[in-house]
Length: 176
Image (cartoon, rainbow, N blue to C red):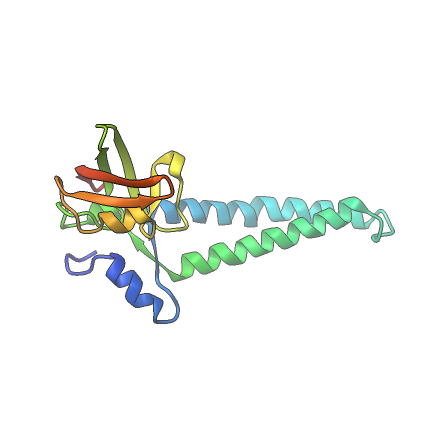
């Protein structure tokens, strides 16, 4: 990614007016989604298809629970395959390690924050398809993600959350 092209909230907000909305994914997030797609396509779908065929061979399909459940599961798999394919086809893949302007927070940054009580938390700013709060990945579109964009070490931000406002100070910025 060039130094001039930072996927930040201005880009995201401008894109909302255009069709289609441009989504950002980290390289690792795109790889996780691709692995899921391949697993569904090459393992899960053929297995469920075989189960549906075996259930169909048993006769009356109207009262065959295995057949009905299998068909429902196939529809869910197909829906997920379409979703993953569309997201991967339309996403802009960002490799955080290639970020050139490392002193500011942009998409893909891993940020260590300190709250008013001195407790430290580390998050990676990722796309909405990669969110994993327990794993420390928060959306660039979240209140914290939006507040942190373009900040540098030492900057403080106030974030409004359901439990009330909190002040967070940027302690470290990394691009891994």
